[in-house]
Structures are given as C-alpha cells and as structure tokens.
Amino acid sequence: MTDLYPLNPLCPQSSTNEWPTLDPAALHGLAGQIVADLAPNTEADPVAVLLTLLTGFGAAVGRGPHALAGGAQHPGRLFTVLVGDTAKARKGTSWQQSRRVLAIADRTFTEGRVLGGFGSGESMVDALADEADRRLLVVEPEWARLLAVGRRDGSTLSPLMRQAWDGDRLAVRSRGAGVVAADGAHVAVLGHVTAEELRAKLVETEVANGYANRHLFVLVRRSKLLPTGGSTDTNATDQAGRRLRDALLAARKIGTVCRTQAAEAEWADLYYRMAEDEPGGLLGSIIARDAAQVLRLSLIYSLIDGRREIDTEHVRAAWAVWGYCRESARIIFGDSLGNPIADRLLTAIRGAGAEGLTGREQDRALSGHANKAQIDNARDELERHGLAVTVTESTGGRPTVRTIAAQHADKADKADKAPRRSSVSTEIHTMHDGSPPPDDSYFYDEETA
Image (cartoon, rainbow, N blue to C red):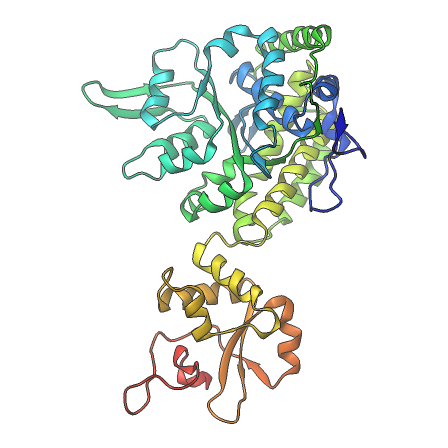
C-alpha cells in the first residue's frame, strides 16, 4: 500500500495544491467509526466515504424524522456532489464502499430505491408516482449530464429537482395520462463530476434559480494506492451494517427532532456566523443555503447516533462537514462571478499582469465570445465586486484607458492614472474622417478622456 497522504489518512493534505482539511469533529460517532474501519482497505477519499454514507443514510431513513426551521420541515435529505480533481479521484469507489454497509442496513432500499440519473423530470416523477415507497437516491456518475438535461428547452428536471430538495409535491403533465404526481417524495442525490467539468458547465441559470446552492460540493481525491485492490473486512462491514440498521429502525419512529439546550446555544453562535458569511459572487450564491444544509447534516448525525435530539456533538460534526464543503466551493469557484463573460474577462486581465488590458485588448481577448456592450457590462461587474479597476493614463495626447486586476491596483495608483467612472457609454467615437481614433479611447465616453 502506498499512502498518498501520510500526514493523516482521514484528512488528506497536499503540499503542492490548495486543498480543504476535514475537521476531526466530522468523524463523530458511528459514521466516523465506519469511515475509519473502511479507510485502510480502499483508495477512496475518506471524506467521500463519509459524505456518501451520510447522504445514503439520510435517503434510506425517509422523510419521517425531521427538524424544523421557519415552519419548514428539514428531513435528512441531501444533494451531494463529489468533485474530483481528476477522473481518477475514486468517486465511484466511495459509493461502492458505503453501499455495502447500507445494503446490510436496508437491502430493500439499496436494491429497489437507488436509481441512476434521469433523462427528464417526467421520468423521475414516474419512478415515484406508482410506488408505495417514495424514497429515492439518485446516483449520477456523470452529474454534469443532469445540468445538460435541465438546460434543454422545455425540460422540467431542474425545477422538479429543486422541489424535491424542498419536499414539495412533484407533478408533471404526461401525454395521455394527464397530470402525474408524487406526494410525500423523499429524494436525495449523489453525483460525481470533475472540477473541470463543473467549472465549465455550471452556468448562470443554475446559480440564479437556486438549483446549485441546494447541493453540497465536496472536493475528493484518491487517498492511497492499493495495487492489489485492497481487502474487505467482512466482520467490520457486517457489524457496521447491523448498527446502521438499528439506527434506521429507531429513527423511523421519530417525528420532529429538536436540539438540546446546549445545542441551541451552539447553533445560535453558528447561525450568526453563517448570516455574516457573504463573500459575494458565485461563491456567495453557492453557499446561500448554509443554515439549511448544516441543520440537515446535524439531524442525520443525531439519527445515526440513535438519538431523538440533536446535541452539541451533532451540531459540531455538521459544522465540520459544512466547513469542508464551503472550503471546497471556495477552491472550486474562487472569486468567479457566475457570469461567463465577466469570468473570462477577469482571467484575461489577470493574465496581463500589472499592465492590465486596454479596451481594444479586452475586445480581442473576448473576440467571438461577447460584443462591446457585453464587455462593458462585464467590466462594470468586475469593478463593482472589487476585482478590477479601470484607470485613465496620461500619454501626452488622448489618454489611454486600461483595466487592471485588483491585486495590481497599487501600481496603478503610483502611476499618472485616475480611476474612471464605472458606468460606460456604448457609444463608439470616431475621427472626423469616420475612422476609429489611434488609441483605445473609442471604448469609453468622452467624459473619461
């Protein structure tokens, strides 16, 4: 066995690339014990095994046990996306490990209520409408495919998935069958995607409509090399499965789950911290449902522990998982704005270093991807978020206007430059003979010159 992360096999580290660290509090109770038992015999990231196990248990337990927030019920229903830094991150392996334990706990669920990704929203409702068992775990090894399906004209998949996360009634119109509906559905999602695919295919629509922030994005990678494939500790797996079965049976007898007094104090402190966590941009949109996600995670931890109340250790475990997911999102999406034109422009401006890009250079950088008005709007958005500054530069003639990345703004301040106003005109100025002026000022309003 070659351990790729010798510092701590349960908390992968990297000396060369930025990577989130899992707070040991996340490895609380039975869930943590199962991860520890499985870790030596699999190449899967322990974080992936943990999140897969929590998601699977939350789906298997059903919508009966729930916590309340603002009058809304929050059962242990998670939409989790494992994001591999490469295609060799062993995302699927983590599901195979967790599934063995879940199969011992509830074979009816793993054999009948775990399905592959859907080609439409209608197919998802069909899978639920005629079943007495309304639990469903959607396992999608190519999660980016769901994004593509949801983007098709007339597709109902995205709105139905949002309703499923919320626990609303799912209904679609079907040819010849009128309205097909599923009440009381309990749908969880486990998706796999590479970081490159996610950055490329998650577009502004999924961010704006709240589809993206209903998901937990979790960076995972191969934890070690096992040339012989590892071995299975059958006794440990059987014991873990039996303990998980007991927890499932006990949890299904519970309705509303409340926090203990000590947990309430812990939760109040974290709630204020989450309320103040507003990084803006795409990251801000992705983490917007932090309180609901932490609440659901804390519920799952308490149910796995066989408890009828959420205690401090469950809140802390949930917060540790959220911390990893939040840091994963920051690394994946960085300071992206979710506007593909603005993000592409920011990349070009940063690539230009301290010199920045003039208006003409920005146009060339985005040639074929955006028109002038779109570039102007994208540049304004970068300035509003403090990611770039546009300045005028004295040249002895008509001033040159250029945009510089925020990290190089100090150089701009030292030069003979002054910030221009953020609002730009779409008017293109010309010389007396009708040709463009020799510099880049035609991109901007005369007032900036």
